Amino acid sequence: MLKKLGVMALIMVFVIGFSGVSLAENEPEYTLIYSDVASPGQPQIRAAEKFAEVVETLTDGAVVIDIHHSGTLADQTGQILGVMRGEIDICPAGPEWFADLIPFEEIAVLGSAYAYRDLDHLYQVMNGPVGKSYWDEVKERGNMVVLDTWYLGARQLNMTEGAGEIRTPEDLAGVRLRMPDTAAWMDVGRAIGASPTPVDFGELYTALDTGTVEGQDNPLPTNYAQNFHEVTHYIVMTDHYLSVINPTINADRWEELPDDYKQAILAAVKVARYYMNRIVLEEEATLLGMFAADYGMEVIYPDKDAFMAHATDYYQENKPEDWFENYLEIQEVGTDMYRP
Image 1 (cartoon, rainbow, N blue to C red):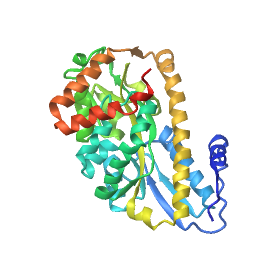
Image 2 (cartoon, rainbow, N blue to C red):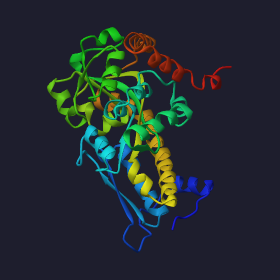
Image 3 (cartoon, rainbow, N blue to C red):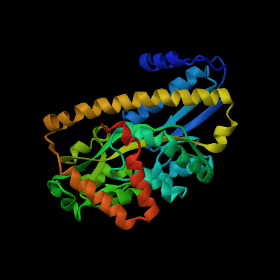
Image 4 (spheres, rainbow, N blue to C red):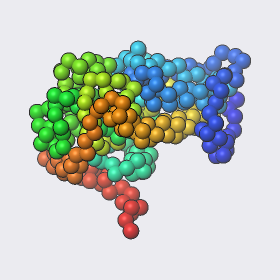
């Protein structure tokens, strides 16, 4: 029986956390398989664990989220296809993956370089009317329900010593920059001036170590959790994309759940969102100094205006006119909140 929680109770759930002990005396009614390629300790796995904990508590153990991390069930492509087909219940996905795998090319604009000013702007887009229109299409075309948006962090360039200092897009010309293997992600690499090279996330450490790629882009917490600081030398603070994951569930599986369990899942995913966002923001604030002081990495603050201009020019020259207009419209969402 779903426990009724008011707004204040939900806030308390987030603040104090849970013991992790199930209240159920019987077997769960639903076990939902959750797949992720991230490893334990990464913010998104910690958030998934919080999500599972809250779901189990709110449903008195009737719904259990069974988390499989480190790509043990599938790689990033395979797990999203698995959710589409109903072989996996839930996984983190995102616009860049939906664009290729549904396929739904138009949604890639949500995952483009320099689309967002800051985290507030990102949420105005992703969880507002603009995002909802795209998520409705994801359900219709891809048989998936997007549950929420979790902040993964600002993506920065993380380069090997051999790549040299990167300060402008021209410095990235010909540089092999690892990107996830989708057209939308490859576009992000080109938009900032690099030669994008697809490498699976699970193989990235070795690819950096052997020189297969000369750099990669990920948020600072991801870099630390995956020990990329061991095989790279530079952190270049481009802030070229505010990276997110979208916890996504198979639509058929979602529809078979009773309404009270759906409400429990939606409440839990929001708790996990704030939990993960706090972790990421705190780590972003502390890790940069650690990389420099403890690991001898060089931190570079590049000409970000030049990178932004390069991205705009790239998209204008290489995307359809309506796609580029959507890109500009996304950048304008909520600007009235920031103008004097």
